[in-house]
Image (cartoon, rainbow, N blue to C red; front, side, top):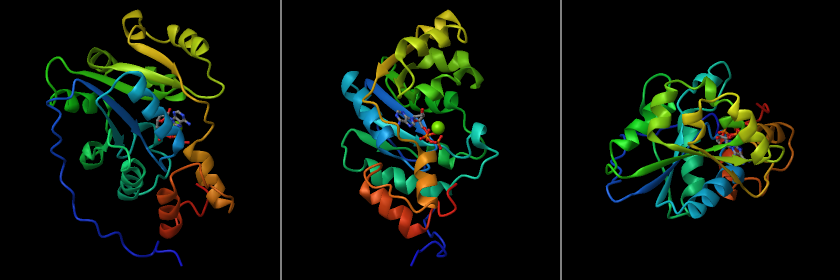
Length: 227
Ligand code: ATP
Ligand code: MG
């Protein structure tokens, strides 16, 4: 029987005191993570090793501006799934900074937050998928954001790096474009949308995401309506 009717009784976890003083190259991966899946994990690990990052911090969003009209899973459940998925990788961490912030979170504010915790010479690499980078012109405080980090855009199936950069050229200022690096990641056509639909339809999600997250989804009765 699903535990979905039981109230979630998590304490109010405080904003973490992450010690980033010795971190020179930090990766950030933002997302709704509803749920987190192997596409996110493979991408984060590929960028970590490809760009010699010291750590990758996963930043589950609060209520993201671009998904404000859609129903998204309770933030503590998305947080727990993100922890479950990343716990086995010593380079991965999860931050509650956006979850604990009231209202909308903008990536520029999140990047500023991590910048303020790092040494002056530290660098931030913001990891996204190709679909997310193609919408970056809609993000707020772009000048500030590009001043403080480099974007690594992982190409998903159907998004060739050259095509992606070509399309970006028409959308971004030259100085911003210079701070976007495309990276081919082993093709993974996995998306949270597809996983939610599969659960709703009673189809298997095995191997699309870590087993612990799969078990958590069933135990909490998430996505039974396929959304
Ligand atoms: P949804 O289908 O609900 O939009 P999603 O699978 O796209 O979910 P998000 O939480 O929206 O996941 O994405 C977080 C980040 O991960 C975004 O930058 C997105 O582009 C990237 N991403 C998502 N899926 C993949 C994948 N299979 N490979 C590489 N990057 C991905
Ligand atoms: Mg998405």
